[in-house]
Image (cartoon, rainbow, N blue to C red; front, side):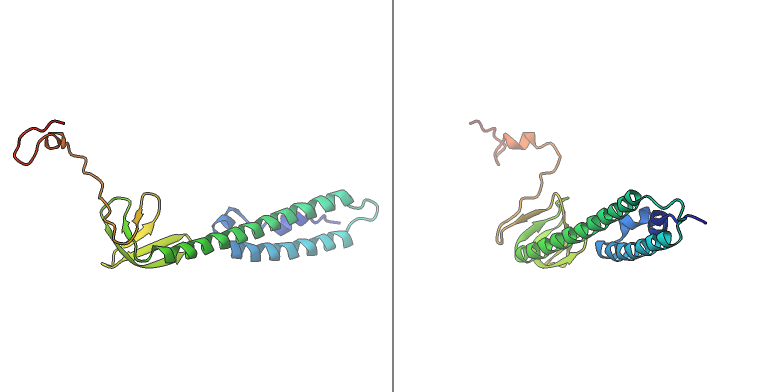
Length: 169
């Protein structure tokens, strides 16, 4: 009689492409795979050779491994929900504040904020959109954000006043 490999049947359809699925999609997929796994396990037990039955410890090991994967997927789903809730909570705090993009080219007052699954985009009163990411400056309302200094050499202008006279301190 042909042997049924429950793990190959249950996880054979999943591949490295699962990493691009959302946590919710992965949870649904895991649930389907878990049900498939149980069906294959029952089929394997029904069709096993009575003279050489499957080792019970092997069945328990397979079930435990699959259960761990299912728990990890559920944990990832919960963490994604917590992260999205944090972004939503932060989003309302940004409205009315001053913002400057990471490159310093776009500045303004935040008019509205849009929360996506992978981040937050702030829209200024002028209609410019800025992804809130590392390097973005956000300041309290009414504050002027200093743009980054240009990389040109201003050492000669630092030591002279408006009359061209050198100043010393």
